[in-house]
Length: 220
Length: 242
Image 1 (tube, rainbow over the protein chains, first blue to last red):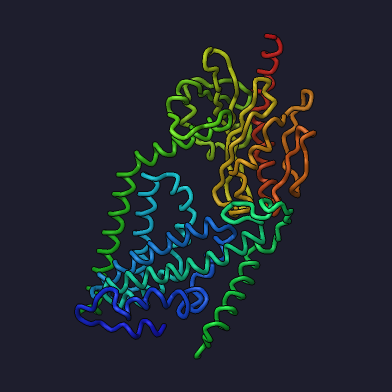
Image 2: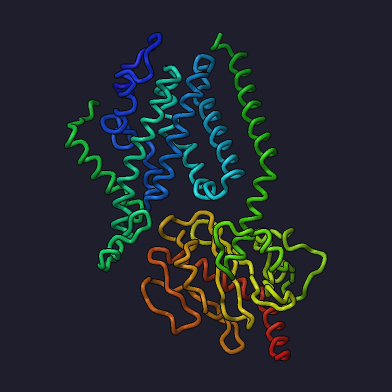
């Protein structure tokens, strides 16, 4: 469990954007990043980062789901029996995600077509469960909301970095825009970057760069 | 209290009933809207093989005015009394080719509704990871491809999933599926960036997605075979009318 979680103790009428709570958003971007430090949600980070567009869609969807299910679980936290808490969390997340999926399918079909493949990935994403278990079960809804948004942002940041390099090196484009062709160059895509192995390499490099900048060391 | 067995069981039951109820309610309440969307999408896909659709076009109106739905069987005989919309192509696909019921969409002329402009054939198959499907529009000679539209369930984004892009689908335009009188399907090749404009039965491949391309090739071959009897019959009618 991270340092940020231990810091936030329940106090009465703490302002939502107090210094401690602001850290809930900023920490996951760097020193407490869900992918590069907590190493959660790596599976989906490999699956959806061949191009930037699905990576962005997945990031936004995951942020919404993490934040809202954090709030729901936080509200319910004092009633949940600890022996079945995991399955209760899973039931809540699954219900919530499928509800959103159904609503999208009914009202914004084009968006749904983009998102539906990610729904299964979101429900089983370790970040959602990880934040529920590590944070929402012990904190009030306000901070839980911020924690969900923060982790969603941290996840999205890494996804976009990985997606950027994979799409650029693998397909020579960014958000579908052919960069090299626009510059008048011929570029042959590097097939390795489009395979999951390419994502592993890039995630590894990102972790390396990040840790050499912020000096993070594993403590155990 | 929170740890007692009774509380846990009741809690689990309550969660199950509440989430189950919510999902069942949402699914029932939203079904008409969702079905309408799926239907609109189908019409859009059919129309997009023969014409360019613009933002704001009334798909339902164009479809009703121009498209006639019929159902045929493997022998090419029309089967009256069965509605094309009642046929689930995904289910028919699982049957043996000769047993399939085949929907067919005739795209009629705007001014003269008895005149046939294009015939749109649904196709269905399996890509690398999951189902792929689509529509192929043939011109009046029932051989030249006017346009195609492909959809997929789970092909890899950036690789096999490119079959939904216009870039790939445009490669099929103008190709033909008959060589003299013999069926010869259009085959997507391995490797990308080659020029096949002189060969009516080959299209450029998708780099890194050869297996999805294979799925597409099998799908086209399979379904052109299914429609072969119909196409042959009507080609003869056509030539005798000329």
